[in-house]
Structure formats: C-alpha cells, structure tokens
Length: 126
Image (cartoon, rainbow, N blue to C red; front, side, top):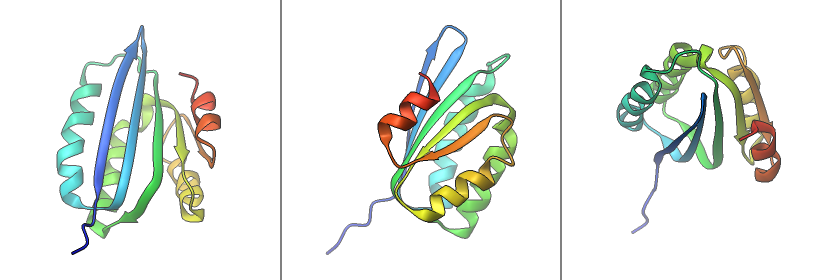
C-alpha cells in the first residue's frame, strides 16, 4: 500500500514590523487543506498594520492543486495580496515558474521563482 502525502505546513515569525512566513506544499493540494490553512493565515495577518510580509514557499514536493483548491489559493491571494512585499517560490518544475509569474498579477509586492533554496532565501531578505 502506497501512502500519498499532501498538505501545507506554515511557519510565521515576526521581527519588529517585518513578518516572515514559510510555507511548504506537498503533493496535490485539496480544498480540505485550504480549509485548515486559510484560518491560520487569516488569523496571523488579522492584526497586522502596514504589513511588511515576506514569504518563502517551498514547492519542491508539490504536484499541483485540485480545481477547488486552486480557487481557494486564488481567493487567499486576492484577500492578502496587498500585505506581501516579497514572495520567493522555491521549486523544481516549469509550471511553478509560470505560476509565480501569474501570481505576481494578484500581489502588490514582488513574486520571484528560484531553483536554489539559498538564492530564494537571500532574495526574500529575512
């Protein structure tokens, strides 16, 4: 029997007025994954004024989204897009680079794709 892992893990740190978020996506994300993670993100960012959020997303184990989960991701980006200053997407698949370019349309800050974890971390400036 083969176990199929999927889901999102999130880390949040605050340093003065700067928030640093890390997210790791594994497998094919589902609507249920977003039902769990969305309230966490909403809660973490609820009291943030003049947000200066920098995020590092590790998509190296991500296989994509179910259709409803892709919609959930889009809604999350629309809701919090103005709060992010930089989003670094660390990945290893061509479609992730395309997703980063599309994501930049919905975020007021910069979104950039990297194939090197260290370069992504350095760019996101934590």
